[in-house]
Image (cartoon, rainbow, N blue to C red; front, top):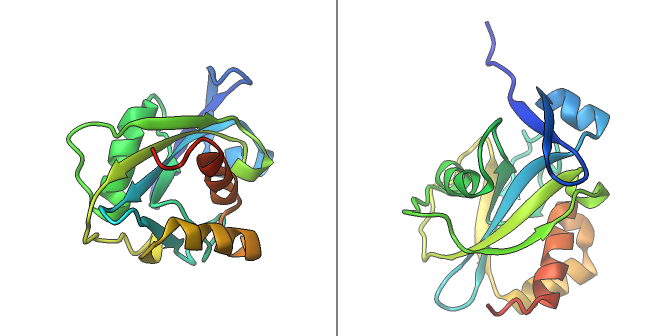
Length: 172
C-alpha cells in the first residue's frame, strides 16, 4: 500500500472552502486552493532562498521562497506557515510569523491563494531532502537583479511574490 495522497481544500473566488480533492486532481484541473510562502531574513538583511528538489511535481529545480507549501484540509494559513518552516527547513517558530500580504489565485501561483509571511532567523537550517535540493542567503538587491535577468530560474509564484514584496516596501 502506497503513501496516501494529499487532500486539499478547494476554494472559490472569495477563498471560501467549497470542497476537497486530491493534490493530483487539484493541480491537473487548475482548481483554486491555498498555500503559504515564508520569507526568512537574517540580521544582515539577506533572504534565504531554497532551490526546489528535482523530485517536486511543480517548479522542480527552481529557486523559491525560503519555505512554501499547501494548506492541509481544514488547516489555517497561520498553522501551515509554522508547519512548513519546520518541515522544510527545520525552523521551529513559537507562533506564526507576521503576515505581509495576500496574493489572489492566478496562473503564476498555480491557482493558489497565498499568504506571504516574513520572519527572522540566522539558521543554520536542516533542509528536507525530498523538498529542497539546496539553499543559500542572498542580498535582496542581488535577488532583484537575478529575478529581472533570469526569471526562468525561479518558481513563477516567487517572481510574482518578490515583485509585490518590493512594491509594498520590502524593507518591513
